[in-house]
Structures are given as structure tokens and as C-alpha cells.
Amino acid sequence: MLSLSLSSAKNIALIAVAVLVVGALISAKVMASVTKKAIMIVLLVALAIGVWSQRQVLQNCADKIKAGGTAVDTTCTFFGTDVHVSLPNN
Image 1: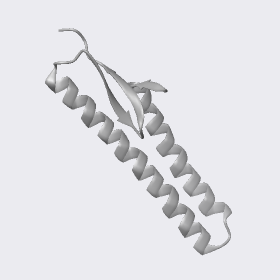
Image 2: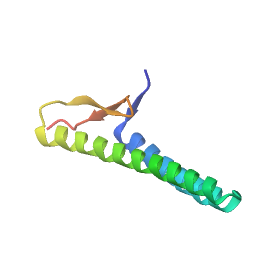
Image 3: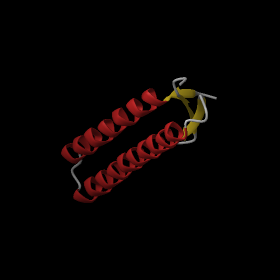
Image 4: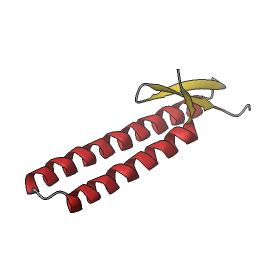
């Protein structure tokens, strides 16, 4: 199974949001039908919101782990993918 670090998962989420927003803008420019434009924009914006919310859930999980301070290494999930969170040894 693919395992990501916290920072790489957050960066991937930001890139995905940017790609989805740009895709929505391009599809609005290219598509001729107003109905198709609206459906595509709503779909891509909904996907971008989903990615952003998963990024927030990932950050909240990492913050909880850091606040607890009990584990040195643990995992959180990002769209079902394990994300490795390392805490510095105190």
C-alpha cells in the first residue's frame, strides 16, 4: 500500500485543488452548452471542496497526534491512503 508523508499529502491536495479549479475554468471557456458548463463546474468545484476537506481532516489528525505527544510515529488517512506522521523525539 502506498504510504505518504504528511507534507507530501498536503502538497498533493493543494495541487489537486488547483488543477480542479483550473479545469473548471477551462471547461467553462471551452464548452458551448450552458447546461454542460454548469454541470462540469459544479462537479469540479465539488471535487475540489472534497479534496480540501480531506486535507483539513488530515491536518486535524496530525494536530491531535502532536498535541497528545504519546506516539513517535503513526498514520492518518487521506482518501483511504495511509499518511505517515512523524513526531520529533522529546
